Image (tube, rainbow, N blue to C red; front, side, top):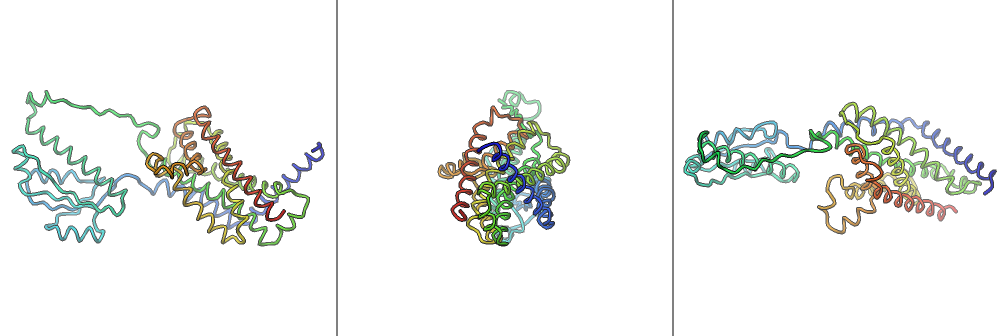
Length: 384
């Protein structure tokens, strides 16, 4: 390609990109939807979702009615548990659990205090509704910690404050440091997670919708017979929609996540936006493939939803790779969101740089090249 051909190639690319941007600006409903995802949706996810146990409803069957049982019951209090009162038989407890009106029932046996004073072991029963496994696991974990603490305190009281035996007991001091999110603020994790999810969805949806819109209007055939190459037809759609998505990410980051949730960005924002741009390019390749097998916007929407489910499940955001079966762990390697998740959290919360993230960056770049070329190849086969 000579210099004139090179300049002409770029002129056409720029003209097509401007044309795509103008088409998007003329669609106020689509602009409103994009704005909603990057602002209201991210805010709701960051402020409305709590991953800790809060106000879990619990009732008690107290067969002992002693000072010790009352002290144990008192420890199941807010903010983790919400004590709803006492019930007097297991049948009522099972009925309330079946109806989902309470999350758990604490059953304290007879002679609870007497056995403790005699130095005997006592078992209390904690029935938990684990239909929601996350809540069930959290409630069980918190209850175990509470009863263990009560048991230790009760034993310490029996020994007495001045007892030499107590002073001679071995003690393990659990000193831990919480890194990267010291106060364990759910809003940091949830708002970033939602931003990455929204970016994924729009990066697939917008280029696919732009291409299918050409099909619906009958202009795709005109473009196919024009001097434009397949790359000059498809790349402007990716570039224009990518610019819009990057603008949306910037709005979400600087107007919502950082000021509202006080997220301290530890790494380079330039690197984060570079990674985001590469990820948008990768996900757009999937969107172009969707466009080649869709005939309408409705089909694009359904196919994107269909693809979003495995991409999210294999992203590693909710289940760490180590907890997945081996087959799923292999499948994660071809999920672009897995690399994007790793790099985004590492940059924003840990301050990681290219020296640490080079392998994830390389994996995402390879996937991007494969997906985009596959989309262009499908387009050429369809309209070439």
